Amino acid sequence: MPRTPITISENIEYLSILDEEGRLDAELEPDISGEMLLRLYRAMLLGRRFDERLLDLQRQGRIGTFPPIKGQEASQLGAVAHLRPGDWLVPSFRETAAEVWRGRSLSSVIIGNNGFSEGAVIPLDHNDLPVSVPVGSQVLHAVGLGWAARYRRKDDIAMTFFGDGATSEGDFHEGMNFAGVFQAPVVFVCQNNQWAISTSFAGQTHSATIAQKAVAYGMPGIRVDGNDILAVYAAAGEAVDRARAGGGPTLIECLTYRVMMHTTADDPKRYRTDAEVEIWRQRDPLPRFGKYLLDKGVASGEEQNDLEAEVLQEIQDAVDHAEKQMRTMGNPLDMFNHVYAELPPHLAAQREELARELAEAGKEVQS
Image (cartoon, rainbow, N blue to C red):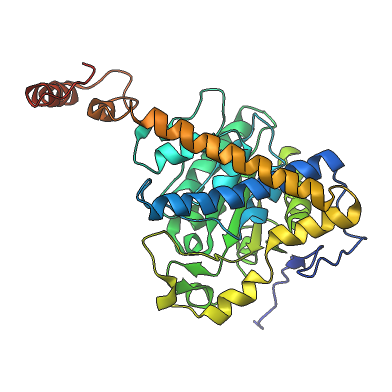
């Protein structure tokens, strides 16, 4: 028998609406209210300035190691802005801006980065999971949540974030396959920031894009300019609407860049050049969006400066509040809580033993 071709009809598109010079493709411009544009800009500004302050605090020894998000604000906020309260946000460990958008307090981030378990507590009325440090593992959680919503005939969706490095993990492929087979309402957002610690994108996959991996699992895939919040917002809006209407999952690849180090324990100068970083600094999403708002008449330069002062004060208030709270935190016995509804006998015995040792050492803790 002769060889016969199998036609695969899917095409992978690249979407850019507002380029790095601030030039707008008016035909592709999404319909976003002035109120939402201002909210997005403020969230981007807050994410950027908070990230910079966290770095200062870490260098001063006032918090522990953390992963900076600088340069990736648009990839997060353009997507998460479409979620409703009943939807699920399933982050990795570099989605601070998205978490804050969903209601996580700045103080909570500071407390968590100091190693206090109180910083990881999610309010019961928030459909958000805590950060996931094991690379790619959160993809499975998101797919489970999405499939459960569909099983219950609800129109809630799940949105999960991960980096380019996670696409080399089995969890990513298992989750994508399951979501495709069962048409789970999940939006997969890959922040392709070019570096998985010291492994470059070219060393991560031989595929031209990450978005094309969607084809293998029977779902739409798109690559967007991840530093263009309008493009991210447009692509995510389509994906969320599709999932909510029963059209299944979507993979969005946000092409962006990790301007800073992987974490504050990393030295990126060992594996990439300053010239490469400078190229991406010129593609910064924040001034690009600020120029758009200025040209559109949504926020003048003075109004943007006022927002700057406002977020800086909010950040300072959060730092003061967190540092005051942390003086009363740190009960070692907390490690036994929030895992079991009823503590198993062997853990109850360990808890009693630790409480006894702490009491003997003169440590005041709650029994």
